[in-house]
Image 1 (cartoon, rainbow, N blue to C red):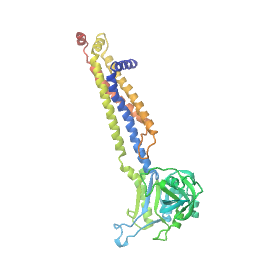
Image 2: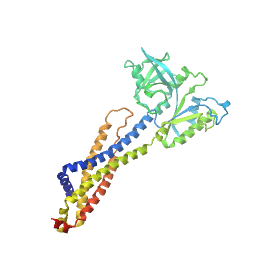
Image 3: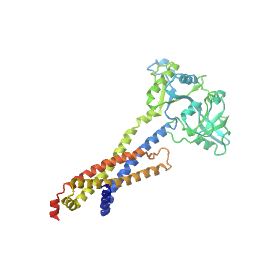
Image 4: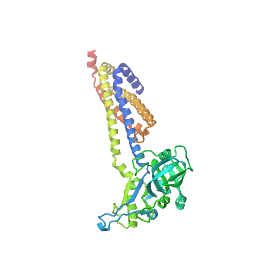
Amino acid sequence: MLANAMRQAVRLLWAHKTRALLTMFGLVWGTASVIFLVSWGHGVTAMLETGFFRAGKNMGEVWAGKSSEQFSPAVDRRYLWFTLDDVVRLRNRARLPEVIGAETWEMLPITFRQRAHTVDIRGIDPETLEIRGVRMAAGRGITRADLEHRRRVVVLGHRIRSRLLAGEGQIDSWVRIAGKPFRVVGLLERVGTQLSRDRMEIDEQAWIPITTLQTGWPSWWTDDEVVTKILYRMRDRSLLEETEAEVRAILAEGLGVSADDEEAVGIWSAIEMLNRIPLDELSGFLFILAAATLLIGGVGILNMMLDSVHERRHEIGLRLAIGARRNDVVMQFFLETFAIIVIGGLVGVAFGVLACLALAQVQVDDLIPVPVFQLDIVFVTLAILGFVGMAAGVIPAWRAARVDPASMLRME
């Protein structure tokens, strides 16, 4: 029965090639749209997550500010800062953060031979290197021994390496930071455009041991070795609020301020920004839009099959007159409709998958989303196709079953 329905469907399409082609175009376009738009929605999500997490996946940032008027009298308000002791205290007591690191920075001139640039110099520790998650293109990162011995070693970001060394220097080259010699021990791979950053992007930074920066360029307002920012990586995004509360409580205790004073201990995470973007709503809207396009294509198939029933009513009447059951007629037209849906749907699936795979190979800017194809999208599309086939097949089959064989034969 199914093979016969497929043959009848092919004959129907061949007999009305122009009408069938225009009708099936809507179905093919709708099917391809479901795959492409849903894949593009996944691509938007992936692009945003990658852009926000290039500075560090699931990373939180903590900085010390000023005691709030809400918790302290105006005359008692004071500026606050962290030290490495606060970092150690947080590592010893915090249970929710997975890794905790320290970072401080200065804008300083860096020179190599006749080239000079003012660069974002970051003092980091090995934990910060792990949190940032940037791979090394060559050499090594900052080690614990570098911190203990306050070594003058530097790791260069991708873009500053290209501008400063310009192919003339590599690992073990010597550069000068504010006139002080530093040995290049590592080169970072390209990170790309960041949606979350402070000051310059990682590609524009140079990293040195945090203790070396604290010794060489001490803070003018205190003798403490100041940590500009404490970084941490969450174990899970769902623990965002719990992790922030734990980190703030521990650090606030060390600073002698209230744990509720958000002005004294500021915390920010790219996850908060990502959560504000209605990605689920966007994916749902794209899916509804694509499914509606596919349903419109199904309406076109429905109209074509209704015309087919009208044109073949004499054939239907003759079959019923010589003993065919109405159920057989119903099944025949239902299967023909479904076969046409399957032919157009499979062509649309092929176009949609090939378009996604082809565009995924195109080299584009970091902030331009490309479709991210997933196999489950095909199954969802086929499920929608099945629904369209059922909806478009019932009415023509029902119309064919209502043909009166006697009246059709009298008309003949």
